[in-house]
Image (tube, rainbow, N blue to C red; front, side):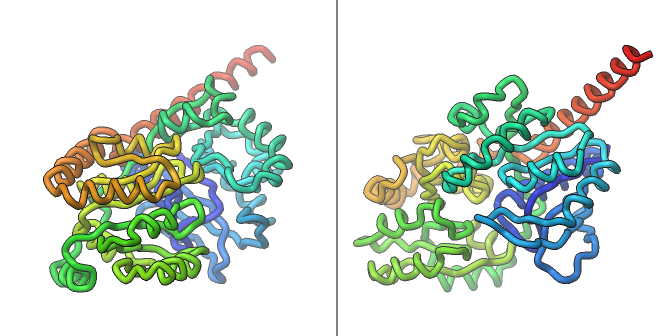
Length: 383
């Protein structure tokens, strides 16, 4: 079984949430006999294929971007060639150029798309893109929603319920590095022994302004891991509020990130818009047995974090409610520990990479079998 993944960015160029999902999926399905290739765009000069954790990464030049939508002429030829060599093409939405490339490259192999998120922000461009998006989704053999919450709340997915499956994201804890005692001691000395942790790219929909406002007039230490387009804006916001107890540590490698996940008291995840369709770093917190605070935005964040069970869930963009939730956990360590234990159990039950890989492998085989049966039926009718 040969599967081609197509997404705008991937390792080693970027390390966001969708890239992490594709990585975990490729590693997990490889163990089940699937051969994976990931095709992505890159600004790098050296674009030779890379072998990465048991799968192949093929990168082509990024020519230009419009509203974060990367375009590449070389990708059209690469998609046609690689699709011809594989059994299944696995798209990752949203990426409007991908939809266009699907048709220009005349992909005819069994295909599915993981629907990672609605398009939320670019309203005017969305209206222009709408006909292409609908044509693309109609043409794909199967659509995968990443949580029952997102399936229920997405108007787009509601139009394609008959061919949409739910396969949640999954993580494999064994591929994360184990931090050594020296690294743990370094971070313990730097950030203290009790702190809230946020991990993620610093984007508009992450709601970090809510977190900063929530800890004004408190002394709760907060560590923010990540870099991104609104980093300077957030640091200025923190400075205006005089938040000396908030520490921006920038983007970190996996070893340092795991050290902070190990040490932190709880996860603070204030994303307030539906662009946050799931929350991989929130799931990482659950995997490490941490209680969580998140907002109810009708997406997978509330499938990971169940209010009153694995953590606390508050209304979106409500700094007072978020601050109250932080105070509840901070002042009740026994409750926080119990919630963290239940978060780890929920991860083991629903969100392992092994479970995700098995579900996707079964879907790949189903699509190939259906495609073969359809082809045989057509040949029989023609004969």
